[in-house]
Length: 234
Image (cartoon, rainbow, N blue to C red; front, side, top):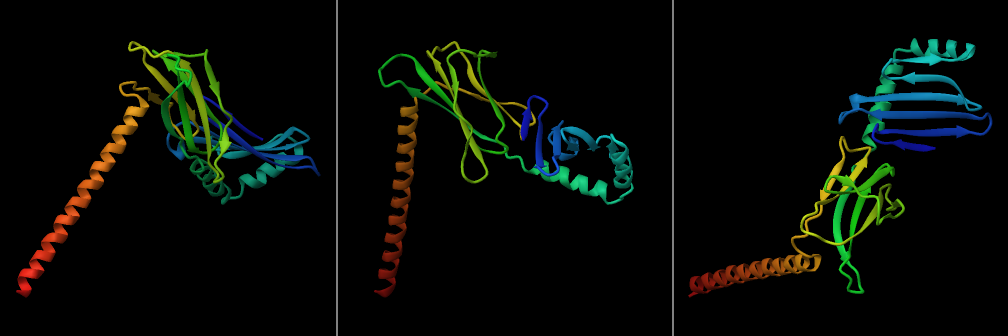
């Protein structure tokens, strides 16, 4: 089980055994950009009934049955347990990796004036993520589609969102991304000043210019060294 809840930025994971039917849930609620600002809880269930729980805000274990009340007293008397829980909370916080977000426009092959904006999020963890399109500060709910969240094969994930639209100069379109690793939503604003093809041609041209400049400088340096060596020998 893995649950992610925005905007409270809460996630859970569980380890379960079938015999006996016991589950261990760990949860972090992120309240700020620092690991110390998270609330960390550990919950033990038996037959789907909550038996015992640790809460970092309270700083102790709480039992809910006669047996687990005594067990909670034993855990609370362990002076090393708070240190263990601080380490666990920090490890869970450090697992998160914020997404790299890119925004591009794709022209339709049939020559229609409508275009497709693609908002792509790469290399993030955990996989729970929320993407939303904004037009002039308002959420766009029509002509929007999403891909599945796909693993990259290296513990990270990627996903894509698509918006069909007719470009106008008066609109401000942005892709908003919410993720566990972000302290606040990320906004990527679409800039239609240059088409994708033109920006690509400019980038390729600049790369060619830089490479040509490097080759020319290298040739001049080589020629000067050869000339100096020839003059010294004579």
